[in-house]
Image (cartoon, rainbow, N blue to C red; front, side, top):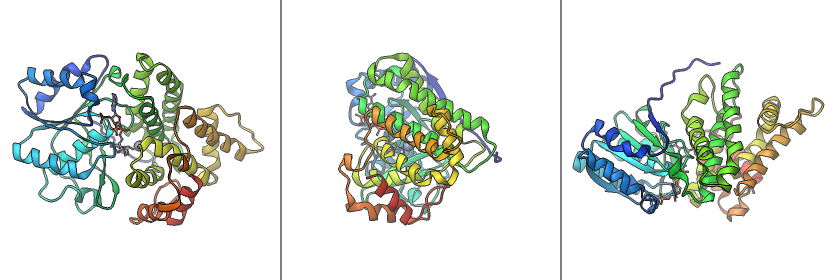
Length: 387
Ligand code: NZQ
Ligand code: ZN
């Protein structure tokens, strides 16, 4: 196990009706708030009204910026930065999913910076100060409600890039599983896939003697797998929604990566796909992850055997470990398929046209991944396998 520092200071309020406390939590950070949200689901569900009335009870002045799209764009972020600077905003409240939260994080960093916020995503500059962020989460998926990261797309060139800083972790996140009842099943399934991918990125490591985090990863994966079909068949099952929601946070709050180095190549490759084709991040991962597994499993067959056996209950064939490893990969693919995810590029109408471009763009800042280092040609081959 590697040495590590672990600090995740996000306060979690979990459970029914917890959004009623959003005013009380927000007021700790000031009286001028930017309310940031997406395309309207929070209005049709009634959440918007409840949030606004809780903020008003604390005499908080509300500025609004709506219209965050999935795969959030830097142009809207720039609008948000101007609002914050012109009005001396104290706190940004993100009500929505990963896209809204990531956009809020970008605004929070841009508001305390003289240059263009995109500088943080190209590596030209790094975050030193930012506004505080609060969250009311409506979709368990990206884990941005406690993560340090933000992923933004620049329409100029369709670059989807990530950056992170510990200060960008939200000050508080409100997680009410009831708010996820209204999710379309496709979005529920995308979220399930994304949170599983966050665990798998950490699970496939070259680090030895990491039994605790291996088993925490396996337990979280099994919990998600056990509850996935229940939430899809019965969207108002509180217990299953609660398990999925908390799993999504645990998957990405960095506890599961303590003492080990994760991979992250599948995420980087997926960001190239959704950067150009604007598909849902979870759907892209259901396509990329199995292809990545097929490409790299020989690097550490034993780890893939452990995964197959402990997560998918595949019986180990001591005379044919490769068969066991491949069975685990097949189970992964079948599971994604069973929850309604696409598992090939063709299914989402992506053909050869941009494969070379994605492989080139994805590796222009160096090879991807840590479990196995991937160069341009490797990424091209993984995308070919994903067809
Ligand atoms: O915009 P609205 O109308 O709210 O609709 C949203 C959106 O269309 C809808 N939705 C959300 N909650 C709902 C709901 N519809 C009905 N009822 C509800 N309760 O769902 C759609 C998708 O929302 P989005 O926020 O895009 O989903 P998600 O949370 O999956 O976020 C995806 C983004 O997060 C990034 C991804 O790359 C992608 O851009 N990621 C961020 C990470 C991070 N910051 O740590 C890590 C992840 O790996 C990921 O890359
Ligand atoms: Zn993800």
